[in-house]
Image (tube, rainbow, N blue to C red; front, side):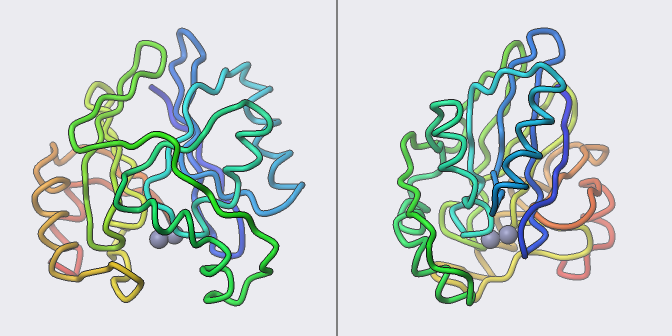
Length: 212
Ligand SMILES: [Zn+2]
Ligand SMILES: [Zn+2]
């Protein structure tokens, strides 16, 4: 599958569109659009490529990763798919907005479909495998495309860094061991698309990420 990266909202959050070039089915991962302009931008990209959204997946339910969920449910009738252990965060989006000093006219985002470790999400002829990588939040997941050798890591792993662990349900030792177990065991050439910042590879991070 192919990956399109868009960067939205005050947090510089990466929203990914993953699509199968043969069927043009796509998944939108972590829709972070915070206003009309950003919503239009996402829709333009989808329309220009002729894509059909079939899934909306949240790597976790922090506010910067869920701001665009309501737009996608209105526009395409797609409800959020995420890990059960992050559902409590989706029910506290307004509270998160207050905590981060953001405008509070945001809606909560109830998770509609629970994703579990090892689940396979089909997008046209492509597949994403769900990896549970807790620690940044309890229900954080990564999405692995084995065929095309990439993984979308949310806020678990960044180029040269890892996610913060001081938010509700976070745990530094849990995050370190989950990254070692679920991500550093992938082939080193696997491309990493993180929730913020530039892409990297599993090999580069397992060799030189200062947190390991
Ligand atoms: Zn986060
Ligand atoms: Zn984030």
